[in-house]
Amino acid sequence: MARAGNRPRHRTLNTGSNRKMASAPPILQLKNVKKSFGSLNAVDGVTLDIVEGELFTIVGPSGSGKTTLIRMLVGMDKPTSGDILLRGKRINDVPANQRPTCMVFQSLALFPHMTVGENVEYSAKCKGIPKKQRKEIATRYLNLAHMPQSYYDKSVKQCSGGERQRVALARALAFEPEILFFDEPLSAIDYRLRKTLEKELKDIQRETGKTFVYITHSLEEAMVMSDRIGVMRDGKLAQIGSPSTIYTQPEDRFVTEFMGEVNSFSVSLGDDGRLASKELAVSFAPPDKMPDGFTSGVLIMRPEDMSFAKSADSALDNRIEGELFNEYLLGSRIQYQVRSGDMTFLIEELRADAVDRALGDHVTLTWRTVDSMVFAE
Image (cartoon, rainbow, N blue to C red; front, side, top):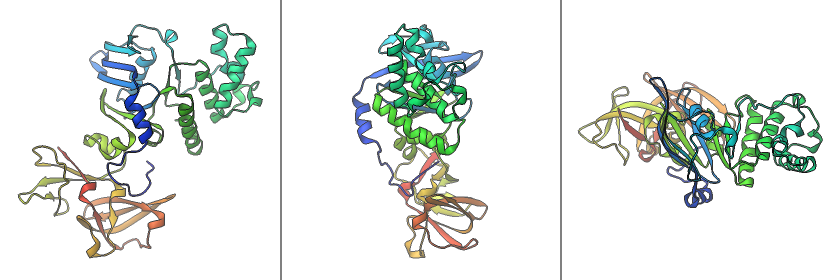
């Protein structure tokens, strides 16, 4: 997952967007929604308000229930129990084709026998809108999706993967829905194009003011695009919050580890109030915020929150001695692998801040107590 070097904890990003979200009314509400398949609760009691005009992303491991959830939101499946409300009106039994919503599928589901323009103006044609107006609508949304007008009469079969993504988005926008749902639409395209389309989607969402509900397995996509993120696990929402909150203030170990790389090891609370590590035979200062009644659990630090001490005197609140085992260049960042005893740690820093180090060098790892997290077992 992309990160920009050391970051202050508890920093809030997208503050203007957050203020907007705080004042806007919910457009879509889920109230204790469940979907069962026999004894399996694929979605298990989800309660959620999605605010009008936000880009809300649902992430989670395979089998967590995110696709089942969005199928109910779009009207492809009915909840076993609970209610789904659109602008306060219950829509559990409203079919997908009668809802003011639209879905962009992973497969895109474009009509292969139609041209680009015919695909985009399809919903307007179904509404009986005259051809001239249909073309005006289609042209407007193709422009918004960064498709040249010369593509209007081009077969979608002749379009590249990225072009078909844009056609599918333009077709969904031309339907003029109140909410657009996306089921991993960028998963099948190459990294460079995916980065471009991430930004374009976010720009289009801001420009149109539409509500986007987005499912992805890409944590980077979720962090880059979202106003808020919902992390799913075992059919439940484990945590909901802004990308900054989810990343810097995770509520449990699962969210912490799911939302990015971590360094972790078992600790127990000693009589001296410090956290003792059996693996490393050293102890550390505990964070200010500790779980109630904590006696043992796991201490976690993110790679960018750990650093190399320049000297013994420059070490921060905590320190570990180790050997530099490997390094990985990640564009503007460098990630290092350090081995200490039987444990391996990842440390990340900006390439501009890096100093020459040789593999095999003895190094001292250090971190601030405020940047560590502790969770009970």
